[in-house]
Image 1: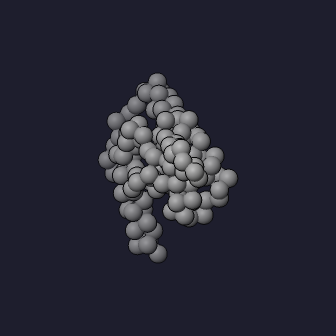
Image 2 (image 1 turned 120 degrees about the vertical axis):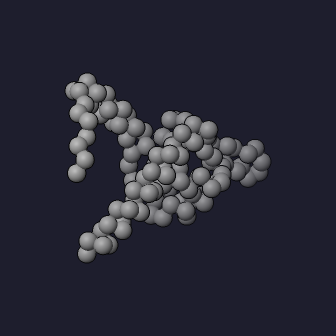
Image 3 (image 1 turned 90 degrees about the horizontal axis):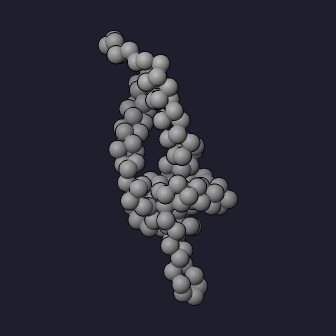
Length: 118
């Protein structure tokens, strides 16, 4: 096992604060799944709900509002009859690309580890 470089209490506290801030904004069961669903293309509410299996309309509505409030999602209202509302990722959401790729890689590795441990 390789030894880690020791960190100071101040560095540790700073890391915990930054990680806590990130998890507050993108944590939970659904937020990253909604973001991943929108990476492909703009989607309407029901399209997102069909893509993200298991999410209720109430929870999706809440998650979209929070993602919009934090600058990750933009709500586009097309002024026609009937009104069409789409959701798209903002440029700020692109800052999560490396995080999402790392989580995908780790998730795949972890699933394989669990399979091989059986």
